[in-house]
Amino acid sequence: MHPDDEVCLCFRVSLRKVRTFLARENPPVVSLVSECLGAGTGCGWCVPFLKHLHRQHQAGQTPDLKVSPEQYAQTRLVYKKDGQRDEAVLREAVGEAVGDERRDEPPGRDGHGPTTSPSGG
Ligand code: FES
Image 1 (cartoon, rainbow, N blue to C red):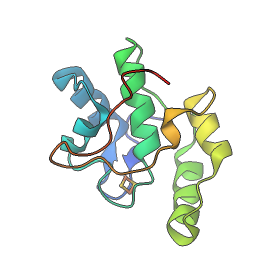
Image 2: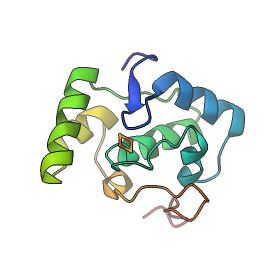
Image 3: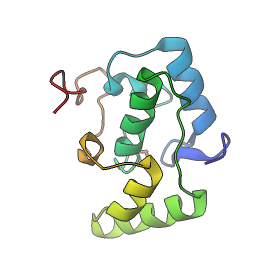
């Protein structure tokens, strides 16, 4: 995904904005990423992707998604219409086995959303 591509399509939050927010704020829990222009607080589609970006940041990696913006937007349309998430696209985007990313509750604006598991699963 290009840095100018949008990760949260509801609030038009680009990958670059998420990266900058993660680098500057270093949020300890993914729910705080919602403070980045409301990312993840709309339809909920981007939440597993935001979780992955947060995990990459926590691991010292450059947050990125291995998916084209066209495919990303197209599968979001299906999600909004049918409520079904395309697991293949999620797996491709995160480039690994899908685990915690599957939880799709939107993070809360006030920090009451889901948090990363302290046990690590
Ligand atoms: S795409 Fe991020 S909340 Fe809808």
